[in-house]
Length: 397
Image 1 (cartoon, rainbow, N blue to C red):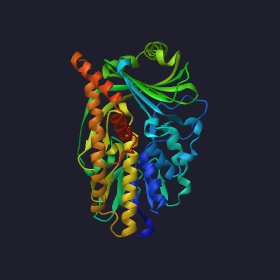
Image 2: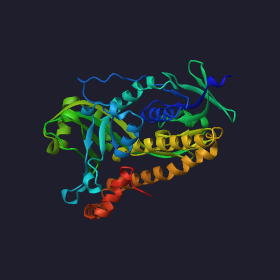
Image 3: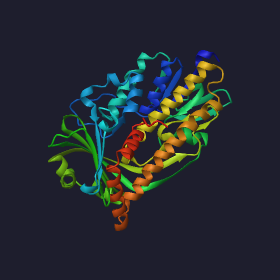
Image 4: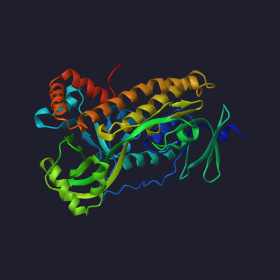
């Protein structure tokens, strides 16, 4: 076996987290194999409605995407800045976060997932040390203490020193390596809707707390909006069966006060889970993004936490190899990543779950308490700044 046949890192999962991680390491001359099993739609038409899956990418993640030279290649017309976040159950208890309060012009940008992934995949050709295996899934993984042997579903074998699982919440790497996970279903689902609004939207992400779940809106380009309707899984199943025009009428009844008349184009659905692995690492292996943790999507933090995983692990590996090329992939190095990311991810997960539990409960006493709490937070610049900085990934510890 020649050294030229061995990769430094094998990344399983070519979504935005796995791809960004691979691109970051390839800039530092790591030999990377990136394996993705799903067929990707990489042609983004200007005439079609926006992709149903959109991302609210915070300023910390934007810095990372700029560092790997991806952000400059996304047409700014399709990147909608957001400067304000609003949440309320009653108008009198509305909580408003504004980027000006922490001296930022914006909190981040809203962009379609497909558009971001397309930019990443189109950049692969610029990196000679990055090899894409696509569309292939992994059949087996074997580790001899030095190298991984990965068998793909076309019977091909690829070999590398470090294996990274970036293959989502149903991670094959996690399952094949025997890493256990804890979690639960929320009993809620989210209906995602692409629509065009009559009223031009400001650069504000907003969500209304209703007795059956959140209703939210992310503004997009050219009067497009991405709407979110959280409800019980049973209720979402009922809505799925409605003709589009009937569903559109129901959507208008909820969102019209803020959006004006609405024209509905696309509808999608997702079930909601919370899960967290017991270990982020094994000898020669690490998990990042949804492969390690996922949570309720109400705060839109999943992708930003995944980018933080990718940045942290990549920088630790680069620093370790610069110090000693022989030991950069050892368990002691990987433990630094686990130590630094597990706490942060757990804290965010607990915070979002607590928010969910507090606001899903319709007990009248709890309603009064939570709205008093919202009024207090909205009138406390200190707490609002802390919460906002933490959500944007810029809170100094």
